[in-house]
Every structure is written in structure tokens, then in C-alpha cells.
Length: 566
Image (cartoon, rainbow, N blue to C red; front, side, top):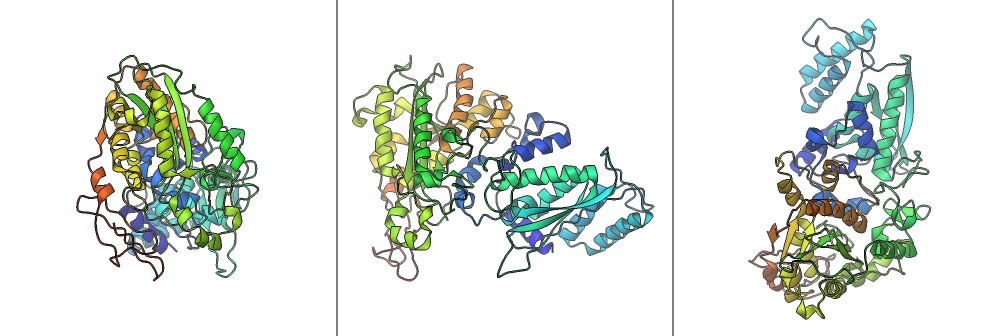
């Protein structure tokens, strides 16, 4: 049963460990903090629960929006049974005498995962000996000690998240609650169940605590805020969806699905929404209009007092991070920008557009055949990415008080991002899809030749040890005791949260300077190489290499593809 967990653990270790932060700071994180008796997201403990959001926020969009989301190193359908026998405790007259019941169970599981059968056998024997002795539990849990067993139905979509990489999350739930938790296997391959059973063994108080932690993890994985748990896909009854932390966008509790707003979401709506939010084009337009209206009218705030200091443009892109994504998941879908005076921190105006991936236009017939009509938003206001850039330039002219994009100067503004990914990686790739130069090189060099990484600025401004500095938006907000509001991972609301951080450090006298520059835009826009079949033809999505040596757009779609010669 644990071979799959060990394999998942090995796979998770082979990759950058960048998918934990999403669970911290929300309901599950709060409950974990309560169990430890403190705020695990703040102070010295912050590094334990913070990590770089770049890859998760941007680089895993197909998993975020896809119904086929799997857990961290654990595949849906795997038989995962995590025995945490903590219903006894006592003192053993052997090498394990100093281990309490929780530690003994954890050691047994670790031995099994590591393949140490000899140690596992000794530990198992000790567990059985303590059971036979009928010794009392020493779990530190007050209240009723009557032993009970309860079953919680876990939606299959949440199984991977609940188990965690190598079983780490289910072990943590078990350890925190002092219970033994086991998850069943779905043996019916032809008609798989929509839920899997999780048996919880322990005292009444322990089981109650375990159920609270488990349901918080379930809600967090698939749509939960504080609502009650409901079976099936989507969110719990009355709960808020996965990315919601406060009032949903556009005044709706579910928030909005950014993918559907952009024109397509592979998740069919369940009661009007998917795990990402509401499937409603009018709500998406309302959310955009209301977000822009929260700022001042662009062009009415005057220019910064020192023209030599560039206006700050806070940017947080959505989509585009999954380079291996299919059906357009490797393209940018949301572009929010908030302009700010670099001296006073005064807001100067906002820009927002949903961007429609070009793949959706090029492959519209194929996608219409493969996906249900409800997946498509025919009323979307999204526009192609090159049009977004042109509209952004027009808006920026108003911010800076110039008459046309021809009068814009790159030293007059500075993009500020939460990480390097947005301007360093995502925009150059998007500007050269499906062919190099889709957004002309001159525009790329003018707009995106430099940026400032807010995480680096934050670390330097507060003189933080690199090993203890926050590595994401949540961490920075927690450091400043600022609450996270809105719909997390909806770009416009993320920019609003980041603006609170930026405004504070500007008010404290921080002068932002570029932390990164783009040195390969020309190579990306003029890259030459040879596609797989050496000539232009109809083809699928290929790979693009922005290195000076050239690029490759070797596309293939079945066996019929030609290639976009990169």
C-alpha cells in the first residue's frame, strides 16, 4: 500500500518543493497553528510554512484549473493506508522505551517507507505489545477517553491533497489529533466511486479534532473556506471555493473563474461555478469594472514630484506558467496593473484585461469537438495578448501624461512583481507565441526590459536573513500583520494585496530600483532554428528556446504536424 507513497515521495524530492504555501494561512493552516499553540506563519516559524509562490501560482495552472488535479506525489486511485496507531501508550522495556505512542507509530511508518523491514518488525511488535498490555493513551488531549471509530467521506479530487507527498499531510493530521487514520482504496475501475472512506480511530475528543482538521484540508483542496463539507466535486455546501479568502470578486461569494472569464475552462460548472469560481461573463466584467473603479481615474493624479524616479507599475500575471500545459494553459490569461507614485505611495490608476490565448483561436474546431459547450464562454470580453499590450501602452500614456506610445520612455516606469517570473519569463514567451515577434521587439524592449522583484526589495528593506525572509505574498503580508483579502490567485485581487505591501515600504522611504534586466529579448524575438520537419506546416504547440543559440518551435499534432520554424 505504501509503495506508491514512497514513489511519490521520491518524485516530490526530485522536483523543487514548491506546492505547500497554498495550504498555509487558510483554514487548515489556522487549525495547524492552533494545534501547535501559535501562529506558524509568523516570526521565526514563518520559513517553515512559506515558500516561493512563483511556481505554484504560475507554473501549475493546468493542475489548478483541471478536473484531473492529482495530489503531491500520490495518484488518484492509489491504495494509501497510513497506519497511525496511537490508541495506546506506556513504557516498554526495550530500545523503544522512550518513544510515546505517536512517536512509535511515526517511527514504524518511517521504517516501512525506508524499506527497513527489520526495524519495522521490531516497532510493530512493540505496538502490539502495548496494545496487549492495554495501557492508557498519553496524548495530552483532555475530555472523553471513550474509544470510537468514525468514517468521513473524502471526495476523490481531494485524496491526493489530503494524503500529501509521501503521506506527510495525513501523518500530520493523525499526529496533531492523536488518532489512527486510514484511507480506503477504490477497487472498481469501471465505475470509480466519487468518494473514498477515511476511517478515524481514537477517543471522542481526538476523533472530533481529526474530523475538523480533515474537513479543513478537504475544503482547502477543492473549494472550501469555512463552509460545511459536501460530497462530490467543487466546494462544500455553503463554503467558499479554493482561492477565496474573503469577499468574493464582483460581490459574489464564489468569486469568478479567471479561465472562464478569459474564454474557456475545462471544468464544467457545478451549480454555476467550478473550483476556481463562477462561470458568468457578466460577473467577470463587473469584477473588472469594480476593481478598476476602486482606484482613481487614470490621468487625474498628476505626475510624481521627482520625474527622475520611475512610476511603479505593480503587475501580477495569471496563467502562462505551465510550459507543458495543453489547450492554452501555457499562455497568459489575466493582466492586472496598478500604478503608484514612487515617492508618496499614492495610487495613480489601474489597468486590467483578460487575455484570450491564441491557441484557443487557432484550435477552436478541435477544442469544440473535445470539450462540452458549457466549457466555452462565448460572451467573454477577453482580447488577444498583443491587443492587451497595445491597450496597456495607451493607458500608460495617461499615467505618465504623454500623448502617444511613441513618446514613452522605459526609464519613466518600472514594473514591480512578486518574483522574477512575470517579466523575466512569462512575458517574453507570450510575446513570441505562436511565432517570434508576435509582439514586436521594439515594444518588448520598451515595456519589459527591466523589473523590480518585490520579494528581494522586501528582504533588503527590512534587512532580513535570506533564510528567514518571506518567499511569497502571504509571507510578506504576515510579516507586516496585514490580512490577505479578496480572491487569492485572481490577478486583480493579488495586485491589491501586493499594493498594501508596496505602499508601506514606499512610505517608509524605500526607493525601488530594478533588480532584474532582460538581456535576451532580441534573441527571443528573432530566434532562428529548425523545426522537426524543417518547414512551415500546420502544427501543434512546440517548444521555444529563447537562448542566443536560437529557438525551436517543433510542433507536432498527431502525425500530421509540420512545424513553425523557430
